[in-house]
Image (cartoon, rainbow, N blue to C red; front, side, top):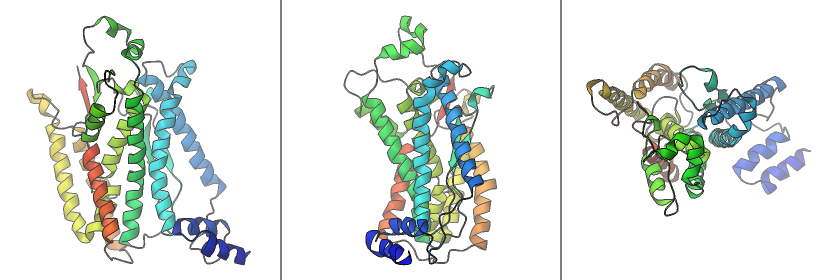
Length: 355
C-alpha cells in the first residue's frame, strides 16, 4: 500500500496540488495531516449549505417581486440561488485548495444563511452573508499567505465576470421587465426610484460594450430582477470588499505577504479612507447627492478596525510566519493583480435608495 501511494506521489501526481490529495486520501504516515472529517462537522457544512440555498431561493423570489412565503413561487428563485452559491463556493474553494496545497489545515466552507424574507427592513436582501473557511494550522510563509489570500478572490472574480458576460449577452426584451412591473408599460420612461446598485468601473465597461446593439439594458435600480446580472454585480461587490487591504480580509493577507510589517501603515490609511467615504454618505442630510459615498462604509471601517485589524495585530505579534522571505516576482504580480481587481469592482456608493 505504501509503495502504491509513493508511486502516486512521485509519478502519477508530480504536482503539489495532486500530491496533497493523492497522499492524504491514502492516509500515508508522512503526510502533514490526513483528509479526515468527523461526521458531525460534515453534517454542519451540509446543513448550512442547504439552509443557505433555501434562504437565497427566497431572496431570488423576492427580487422578482413575488411572495417568497408562497411555496409555489420557490422555483422562481432557484436560478438566483444556484448562481450565488456557486460563486461563493468558487471563492471559498479557491482559499481551501490553496491552503491544502501549502499543507495548511483548513475547514470546508461554512455558508452563512440570512433570512431576508423574515426581516421587516431589507438590511441585506441577498439571502446570505457569504461564506467562510477556517484555517486550523499555521501558515508557513509569506508565499503561502499570498497564495491562500489571492486564490479565493481571483476564483470569485472570474465567475462573477462570466455571469455578467452571460447576463449582458442574453438580456431579454423590455417585456420581461413589464411582466415584473406592469405599471411601467404605460410610463414614458423607467422610473429611477427605489433601491439602486452602485456602478463600478468594470460593470460600466461591460454594460457599455457587452450587450448586442439595440438591446434593452436595465438600469441599476432594476438590475436585481436579472439573476445573472444581480449575482455578477454582487460577486464584484463582495470580491472588492474582501480585497480591501485591512486586517484578516483577503486583501489584508495579500498586503502582509507583499509588504510585511509595512502592511500596518497601509491598513490604517485604507481604514481612514473608508471612514471618509462613509462620512460623505451623509451628504444628503445637507441637500447634496450621495453618489460620492455610502454611510455603510463608516460602519464597515469601524468593524474592520475593532474586529479584524486589532485581531490581526495580536496574531502578527503572537504567531509570526516561519518563513518571512518576500514572495517572488510572479506572486508579487498576482498580488498587484488582486488590487487591480479591487479597483475594477469597487463601488463608492454600492447601495442608494431614491425616494
